[in-house]
Amino acid sequence: MEPQAISGLTIAIGGLGPAIAIGLIASKAMEAIGRNPEATPQIQTNMVLGLAFAEAIAIYSLVMALILKFV
Amino acid sequence: MNISLAAEPVFVLFGLIPITNSLLVTWIVIGLILMLSVIVRFTSGLIPNKLQNFFEVLYEGSYKFVEGILGEITPHVYPLAISLFMFIALGNLAGLLPGMGSVFVPMAIHGELEWMPLFRAVTADLNMTFALAIIAIIMNQYFSIRFIGVKKYFHRFINFSSPINFFVGILEIISEFSKILSFSFRLFGNVFAGEVLLAVMYYLVPFAVPIPFLLMEIFVGLMQAFVFSLLFVVFVKVSVAEH
Image 1 (cartoon, chains in turn green, cyan):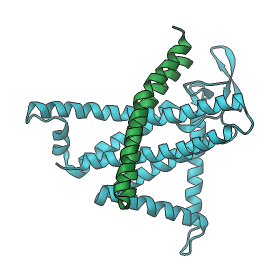
Image 2 (spheres, rainbow over the protein chains, first blue to last red; image 1 turned 120 degrees about the vertical axis):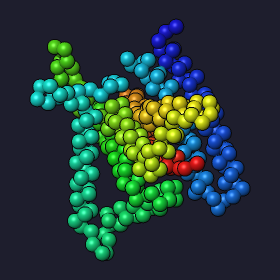
Image 3 (cartoon, each protein chain N blue to C red; image 1 turned 30 degrees about the vertical axis):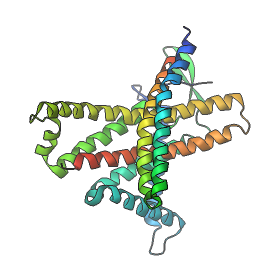
């Protein structure tokens, strides 16, 4: 396989799981806010926390793809 | 296009120590923070002017926020948390200024003359984010030992009460190291990927199209600074909690 295709595939496959995870986290947070609008600040903070963890996995695969392309 | 994963050295100090472009921008950001602190310290009075007002709002809001998470140990942890936030936020924003990545200086590498960009975002260097992550995790261990005692601290990692707890203790040790990696790679990946994206956009359509990408990079820079300090505070809370 050519090197360009491999680095492209790395980020494409590696971004799939985190994208689904982020969608699930955000949707659950929206549900929680809808049920209890008064607790919005706490829900928002914890949602951002969860989003950071989920997005970190996508960033790992992005860094891997960049390493494959530029080094 | 000049995209390099590692920060490039731009001059050599005393003939022995290479200074990278990220380090140069770090010194500039440190100078800026020092100047700002001195200005705020000496022009503040009972009736706040605009700059002092801004920092007072920032201080009160973030102190209440951290207090809501940490409770009574906030005065010990808050200085480090807000310093991390301000340094990373200013560093990320400074990496978007005009001139970053477009001013080149010649540098002799292995006998050849190459042109290196003179400025590069502070956190686009993995060494920098790794250092910040190590600081955060070591201070985490320090707060844990200080606020719940050495015996309970070791009991969290080396625990012979049952086989499952022993395994959980080993997992905790591994998880401390993985926190260092995740802190550093999250920050580095976000900022470096943003730099690559901006470089590609400037290269393709330099007129008007990079504007939404610059806005996104400003947002991502501030967001990652906030996430770094928030994660630090939450990890301190977890390590200080007693069962």
